[in-house]
Image (tube, rainbow over all chains, first blue to last red; front, side):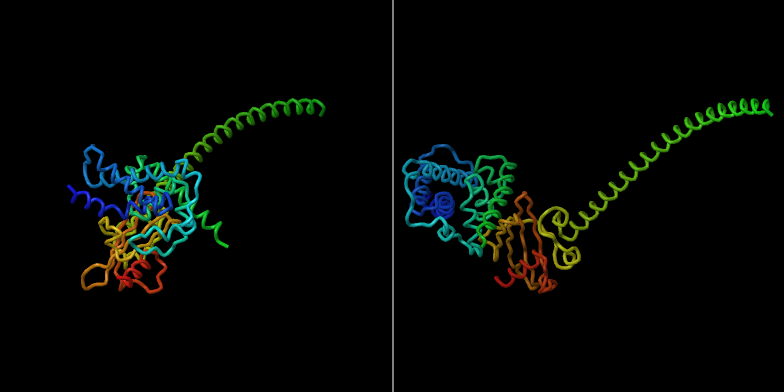
Length: 162
Length: 170
């Protein structure tokens, strides 16, 4: 049984951490969110159909936990001191090299309804169908958010340019 | 002379009546003719438009067919990365999408502001070939095989340039 959980943690921990960090932009809180997601998965008694479903469940739960943390009264009243929102991209630790940190920074500044589809599509390489399943949205909604989010990123980068 | 004049005048009146009647008939005729003509013109214009529309559709259809046959897919017609048809015929070939992951790729490009990602992997074998997978934010997924020997070093075509970069990275 322990082997199963350790396999699960090894398989998804890094990816879930990146998703949590993209939402919460704080290392400690992102790690807490991922741990909480694993705990909920272990406690959850619903049967998981397959690996894809398992992954989608974990991502969705992690995002929900992050949003709950961000909405909490404590979080609303405090400002993290150790991470700069401007350089959030440096703390994402993607398994590949990203040449353009500025764009990733811009993506991380987007409102949550644009940020998650864009981050999952471009940086975690999920398809529109998978994102729709993870975020519990229609495929058309995901496409629209990708398009509008892209426009927001362009706008952000243009305004930032000297 | 006066009678003649009166007669003349009467004749003139008769002439006028006849003339106006003729004119009336003429007007009617020309009006009807004009109506006919206009209908015909409309019909011809509609036919022409349909014909042209058809021919545009045909041309696009042919272009699509050609594009597909040389591996351009829908890229040349809809938004996306433009592929030069000649270059495409020589170096690019559309292949089946393998759903390659980032981890499996030798080189990746994330173009958020352009709305696509590219993944490239050098193919095993003697020939210098690169497999490129393009994913667009409208849901399209396309794959190409690029023969590096046929790609110009100064190519401006995005897929080819990316394939060259992949070759260097691999």
